[in-house]
Image 1 (cartoon, rainbow, N blue to C red):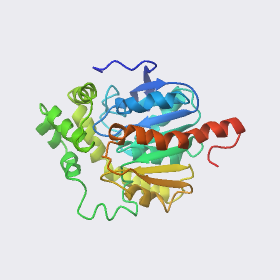
Image 2 (cartoon, rainbow, N blue to C red):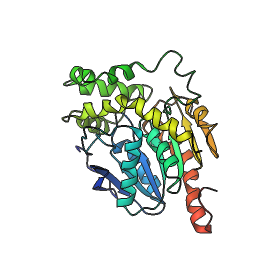
Image 3 (tube, rainbow, N blue to C red):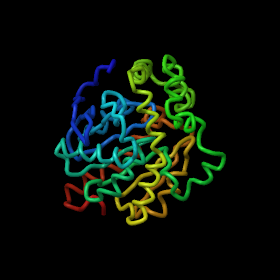
Length: 296
């Protein structure tokens, strides 16, 4: 990447589930996995990794097709992506982890927690819908956001946007931070990542795989509940929609809405995110010291 990793962060290339994932790690302690969305890379979490790494081993991958991870032809459904993360934990010798996810990373974290209840201790889920689960009707009443349809048509978006990546990424970064934008060095990291061959195509494959991901989520919730303690954090535009989807199927759910915050919470309101996330994740440390199972 064009940016040099911050002090204390180590980059790894990890084989997992048929790809090579670029993974940033920092700190030591109970593992916390950070999953970004579109149009980001692991560096979305730059302001979050340091504070969390004082008490946790932080693991922040570039998702399949993003950043420096493999530009795979297929595998952009939530189930395959969840298996990618499962393999990363195996490679790093982490038997269990908490997971923090936003946007496209949220269905991945959710499905991993349902499929591997023995492995995922806690969840923080942000600013995404979980397929067609009940609770999203109001948000979708006027149809999904315009870019969903644009990204879904095979080959269209990448052919239109090649050469104009900066302008397109800037729109999402500005809109997702309520017009504030992001620091220039971080903006350049994201833009450079999406100027690489196949990068746009891989990003849009996430949208093209949404029907498959939705079916996977529906199948999973038909036979099991979400048992990991979960914190659902909303901002604009998703708000409390994710919490409403989770409420009927989660055993231990806390919802929180951050006012006056754009969609990209780790960039728009990182301090508020840490205020909510740190004590929730710290319960893992307390459980470890008292031998109480983290799911209790």
